[in-house]
Image (cartoon, rainbow, N blue to C red; front, side, top):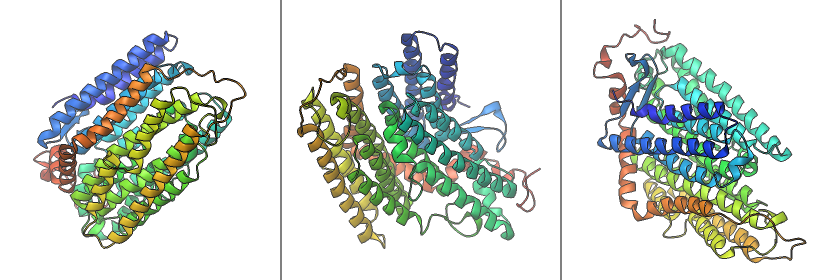
Length: 516
């Protein structure tokens, strides 16, 4: 049994604990520990990605308990993909933060690492209860990160964000309790088998628990009508924190994909497919309302927050298309949107700092220092998020459209995606023309420092990853296709977790009560 899947969780956790002990240490030491732990995690993520290329999931059983007992971590194609994306984002965001922003809060580095730990754990866990635990770890860390500075508007936004997510977590526990009460297990691979054996009188309970879970994940993903907590929380968060938050909505999408493909894959009985017919309308409405919100935003950060919601709608459109092709398209767009939304949050911060009192408000401000590089950075981010050829946004939307070619609602899906893409282009063009070209003479000179080399490097790294999705589009789409195939063939996952003898596991005679 390899210990590799535990590294992305253990290393950030130990480093965060050490930083809490050394909270009075010089900022240079904190940066070294934080960056070192993040680099180690990134190397481990790359190693997991390579190890899972053969198709066999990596399974780590804490305490070496036999399945389905104990805590189990599972790294398959989907987990490895999400880990590598998280590592790329975390490295760039941390590099941006250590240019000076991290000195504003004594607990930035431990909170950052705890959030990375929670993200990694959510992607690796093979148990529904531990998915809840890692959700709470990343959410609690995000509350602390978003509160840095204790501004009144920020405090109000975080309070709203926290209350909504705490309520969702309570529903999560109810759903988990229902599933355990009926099946006697929370191991996801074991649940996939047990649900097929549920007695007829308990089918309704299992379906209700599944729908509650999907509702909770929709809150985490910020899907319609449960997205209203996100715009204020993300737009008022500090720029590096908001950039890291770009992947938090993707945790909800990941959970939807994992649960619907593994536990409720379709068919008769309690394991029936739960997302039809509501997921596609939810996805398209989320996309439309996110785009309209971005068009009406009054700040660059607010515009980017609404574009985050729009990206969630686009990804869920691919998920709702179903099958390996739909999932592959959704995952390609997921990677693109995570990177470009992070770029937009960071560019908004740099533009806001360069405009003095005008900040990132979408009204005329003073002439920009370093206007050319800032303008090019915003042009790249805006064109990519709008889907201008040959950007990763264009390819991502094209792949999603291709995955709907045989769908009954193809006209509606194509119309919504194309119209929202045009509106996104108008949104970014409007914002760019106001911020970059519409000047007024300032009452006093701006005193904020110009962007540093490390900040430009972080932006270049994220933009470079986005461009790599285009340059290596063929192998990337081939890999996401393999991910989709593995997700729709769940036997490989179940076999890896439960072992070749899982058919001989002790089961109650009639599943409906907890196993002894």
